[in-house]
Image 1 (cartoon, rainbow, N blue to C red):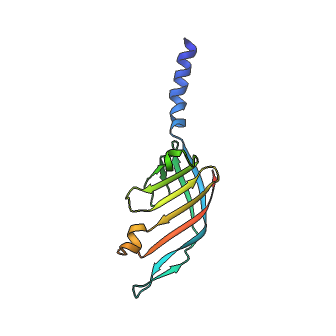
Image 2 (image 1 turned 45 degrees about the vertical axis):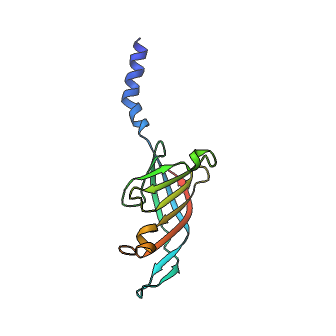
Amino acid sequence: MKNLILAIFVFLLFGSSFANAEQVYYCSGKLTTGFKMKDDGNWWVSKFEKERYTIKFDDEYTSLRGLHKGMPWTCIKPYQGFVFPDALTCFDKNNNGDFFSFDRKGLIFVLGRGSVNGFLFPLAKTEVELVAGNCERF
């Protein structure tokens, strides 16, 4: 009985920190392309600066932080995880079309930004960007 109480106490003391663990990755863009609006209002194909991202998934891989001012992104498994079991697609909470697709096994990603707030409605943002790269685990 003492062992059971001790085990419960240890789990309560240390187990909750493990339950809330994050999966942290350091990601680098390797390929970038997109569209930018010129001052005359015309669009042109452009390359973008290759950026680095420190991203954090929750332990369940259902939430992502680190891409846009700390705002959480919602993640799902495409095709309910049947076709590509290691794939995730994450969407900005604003539902603006920005996405982050990630292969947990191959550690590669594709990031799309500016889907609605860009080419379709260039009010606040006058660019649309697509980035592909790889990640390493911390």
